[in-house]
Image 1 (cartoon, rainbow, N blue to C red):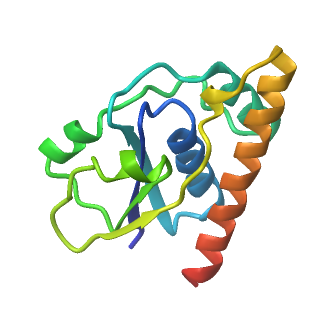
Image 2: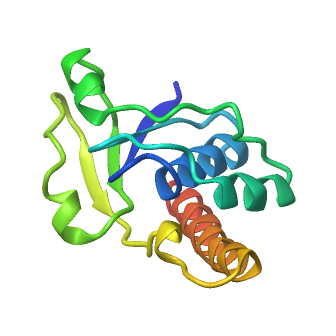
Image 3: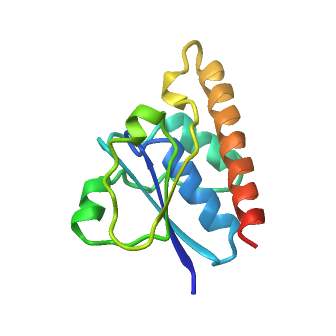
Length: 141
């Protein structure tokens, strides 16, 4: 039976979306990932582009609220925060046996400069998240 994972960040617009997509893509059905935010925003267009470069289309994804998942009584084996530590402490505690992990990544939305600078920054964050997912999958075997 697949283990359920929830990735949480502030706006559910970049980091948690990438983590969800990679875990679903790379886990061969071993995990079912979802993502949500503390204050759902709009999907980051640079993140959509850099994920497409790696063959994953997240353009149709919507941002979701972690509190809606909590109210629905969803149960997860893992709740993994991918935002900064202070924001991660605002996440609700989900019922059931849940492992809480924190993987801090810089927000791609914090990039400045030209469009190319923002894409480069988003690629760097994407690659860090992809590597973390690969490590997580190796450790879970």
